[in-house]
Length: 85
Image 1: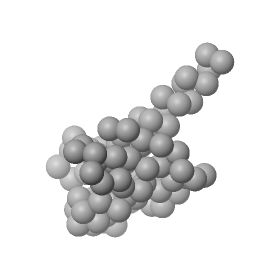
Image 2: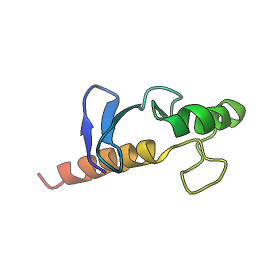
Image 3: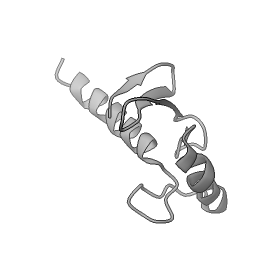
């Protein structure tokens, strides 16, 4: 899943079939983040509102969709790569 930093706290990630791009804002619901995909808006946001706790994508009560998960990994890999410069 290709991701790109598009703002201070915003990352854009392609969908799995690459026909849609989703915007992730890591400033929203801090430290969980928010995404404009259907999974986040219908499932993950409700879980976040109940618990206010980050629950990773692999958990059925997750608060992060796969796009937020990809954005967090992208950001982490970008920071780690900067160590080698």
